[in-house]
Each structure stands twice: as C-alpha cells, then as structure tokens.
Length: 268
Ligand SMILES: NC(=O)c1ccc[n+]([C@@H]2O[C@H](COP(=O)([O-])OP(=O)(O)OC[C@H]3O[C@@H](n4cnc5c(N)ncnc54)[C@H](OP(=O)(O)O)[C@@H]3O)[C@@H](O)[C@H]2O)c1
Image (cartoon, rainbow, N blue to C red; front, side):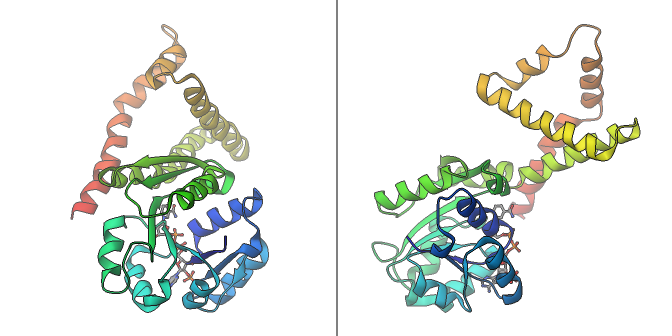
C-alpha cells in the first residue's frame, strides 16, 4: 500500500514517524506534500518518506490519501484535486470533519462509493510513542479489507476506538485536546515540586512516570479511578489533605469547565 499525506505537520509526523519507527510501513511507501518544501525535505530526510512538490503528485503516487492539513484548508484542497481522487481511499485526521462533511464536499466532484472511500478518524499526538488514541467514525465507506488494514496500522500506534458520528466531537475533545491538559497538569505539579526543592528535570521525570503508572494501573485493574484514589488516602493522612485542597481549588469543576469551553466554542 502506498500512503500519501496531504499536510505533514505535527499530527502527520506523529503518525508517519510512528509507522516507520515501528516497522509497520516502509518510509519509501509514504509520500507527502506540504507548502513549506524546505521543512518537508528536512522531515523527509529524518523520517524516510518521499517529499512531493504538490498534492496532485501525492495523489498520483499513492492509493491511500491521508488528509492532514488544517480543517479550514481541506475544502480548497479537495476542489483542486477534483477527479484525481477517483479510485482513492481517503483517511482524514482533521478535527470536525465527518463522513457526511466529505460526502457534501465531494458530491459535486466525485461520488463517495466505490470510487472514493472515506474514513474519518480523530488521532492524538501520543501516537508518536505508540500510545495514541484513534477514534474511528463508525460511518465509513472503506472496503472491509481496507478497514482491517487501516485498523492494523493504527493499532500499531495505540488504541482504536470506534464511535458513532455524534460522539466523535466530544471524544475528540477528550483524547485529541487531552494531551495539552495533561501536560498542563504535569507542568503545574512540577512547579510545586520545584517550589519545595526538587530540581526541574527530576520533577518532570517523577511526575510523568506517576501519570503513566497511574493510567496503567487503572487500565490493568479496570478499577474506578475513585477506588484507586481512596486506596492511597489513609485516615488523617497527607494524600487526603491534598485531595481536599484540590477540591477546594475547584479541580474537578475546572476539568469539566475546560470541556464546556470547547463545546461552547464549537457551538458558537
Ligand atoms: N495536533 C493534534 O494534536 C491533532 C489532534 C487531532 C487532530 N488533529 C488534526 O490534524 C490536522 C493537522 O493538524 P496539525 O496539528 O498537524 O497542524 P500543523 O502542524 O499546523 O500541520 C498542518 C500541515 O498542513 C500543511 N498545509 C498548509 N496548507 C496546506 C495546503 N494548502 N495543502 C496541503 N497542506 C497544507 C502545513 O504545511 P506547512 O507547514 O508547510 O505550512 C502542515 O504540514 C488538523 O486537521 C487537525 O484538526 C491534530
């Protein structure tokens, strides 16, 4: 399978580099176009994919096209590609683009049936280290064998979770935007560590492993996070003091309001 990326920014690099590093796809089976050709060439040399001079060149060299530019750029890209898309499978990683959006956009250009097949996914950047989350919109038009192969490639970079179209938005806010929120939590926690004497580098090492370990413990045991929290809060102990302070500072409601803010932005 020849895979062509249109756009080779943060997300595309996370995916392409992940595939190549894990040996799931040969670098020479990946090509990509992005307007900044110097940056593209540097990334190509580092990762091993083939840089292309135009989106049309990508489409003629690949049978599977990954749309990885910004959502607002896609309409123009699809219009310019037009009937060149005939016969291709499109994997889209763009936020807020669903099967239906593509269907509408492509209806005047080329039909979504056997000619152009679509699968929208919502990825996140931990894909780069094989710990990504990939939300697959359940509505898609890939052939069964194509879907199986796509799932295999993304499962190599993390976890694939199918979702109905109406839940792709909220799912994406949690897993797509989530790394930024977890990073903020780690940074804030490190500030406290530094305030009380831990060197910054040691603080990040300790905190990132604590986040990783706590996540793994929850995944492996399947326990409710509240049960795991209770297990480390001894009566009259130090941890429960910290829990109470977090509650007083509105930690829980800050997390919920963070998602409210995104939902409201999308509505407005
Ligand atoms: N980053 C995330 O955590 C994340 C998570 C989930 C989904 N996504 C989705 O992934 C997509 C890419 O996001 P990103 O964070 O990777 O953005 P990014 O780093 O800004 O990358 C955007 C890429 O698109 C290229 N581009 C710009 N104009 C183009 C055009 N007309 N035709 C083709 N390519 C063009 C850019 O090239 P130049 O650099 O040369 O301008 C760049 O390679 C978005 O649709 C976003 O919704 C991202």
